[in-house]
Image (cartoon, rainbow, N blue to C red):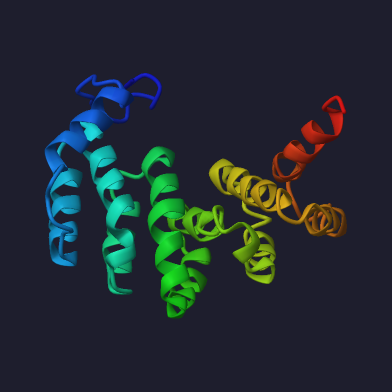
Length: 207
């Protein structure tokens, strides 16, 4: 597990299915947590050296984020910028920040700040936060964010641009194809390849 994460974190060594079962067992029957309890639990898990604790926090937040106020975005930002790597950041982006912004549209101003952040993980989160929105995606926001970081040479930003476009291609293929075509020279090769990967696979599939 540690090797897969390039030895950046220690691990207890619990496989994901067993860890999820343990999480469900210890929280079964508990009342919905107050927001302050979610904050305290997440921060406590983030202090532990073993990565499974951060995964547990993400899972618990995912189940209860819809009860959070817009103020929870401050905690999300702290988690994203602490012990940062794609495994927790991508979960927080799609499962925590995405629902928060959908429930509290005023948080778009926070996304506009994050997309221009020097911290690559905040920028990646801004790009990915609509990944699960499907037809509720704001394409102007998505395409605008992709263009604002298109010249970035950071792998994780280029990959995020392609991934976000690929996810939206499952909803509006024509819009993504047109965007990639119109901005071919601005987007990196990695971003273009990732953006069209699902469509190419679909088109090659036997009828």
